[in-house]
Length: 72
Image 1 (spheres, rainbow, N blue to C red):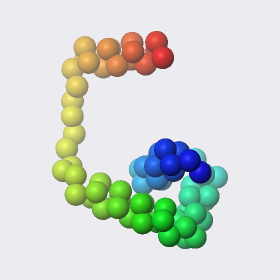
Image 2 (image 1 turned 90 degrees about the vertical axis):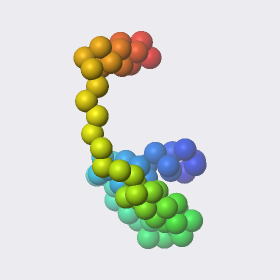
Image 3 (image 1 turned 30 degrees about the horizontal axis):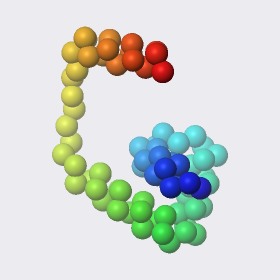
Image 4 (image 1 turned 45 degrees about the vertical axis):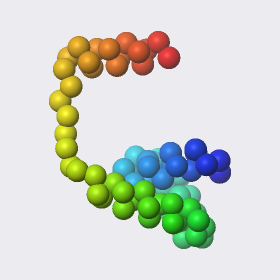
């Protein structure tokens, strides 16, 4: 796996948003590859240390994000 792909998959795995076949693959990789497991543990620990906050963006902000998303 490429580094950026691995980081994306780790984040999706942590947030339980990885599709089932990829989730099984990631669990297998984590049990085999020590380097990726260390990266996973570091990211997991970092996420635990972030404050638990929620944001309520304005309607204008949401509209802007949707507009930009539609363009790309």
